[in-house]
Image 1 (cartoon, helix red, strand yellow):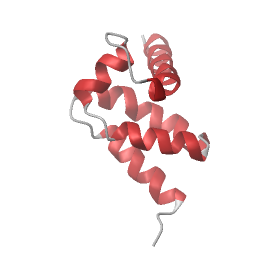
Image 2 (cartoon, rainbow, N blue to C red):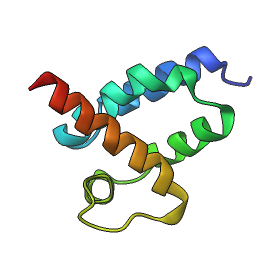
Image 3 (cartoon, rainbow, N blue to C red):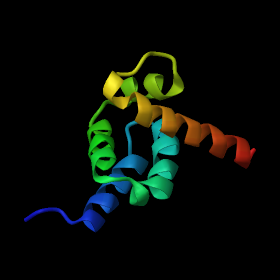
Length: 91
């Protein structure tokens, strides 16, 4: 049985909030809540793949400390920008 879009979004949001390190929870969780419902199928698939990456790799990629794989560049740039704007707005 195929996963419904609703079930998929719920799973992906939960996985975004329950990472291995708190920093990634705070970066991916709010992004997932705000943006996942509006993403197209291809971007959702890419985000799902991103969720399979280790936090020890993800955090340096999203923070810009290390270059990220090319397939994630646009998505991680968007996530990083979202996190920075959210942090500035909350301060």
